[in-house]
Amino acid sequence: MKNLLDRIIIDPEICHGKPCIRGLRYPVEMILELLSSDMDIDEILQDYEDLVKEDIKACLVFASRLSNVKSIYKLAS
Image (cartoon, rainbow, N blue to C red):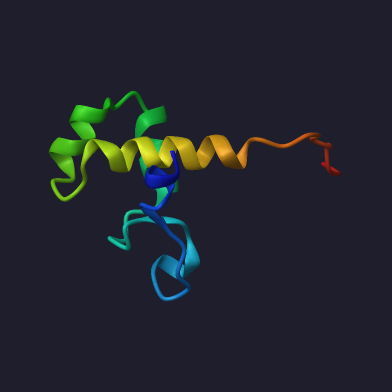
């Protein structure tokens, strides 16, 4: 999994510091939104030809690490 996470770059000069895939200006957030809108990996790879399957997997690993918290508290609504 470490190798997959190496594909995610956080650089203030690229996409305003949002986590991106290999510095290609594809934010992790965008890939997760595509997946949540029922696009499958093959469809994403067809639309974004410079991505590979490992890039999509890296986004999922990155998101799972972000959600790995001990406690979640509701903030004022």
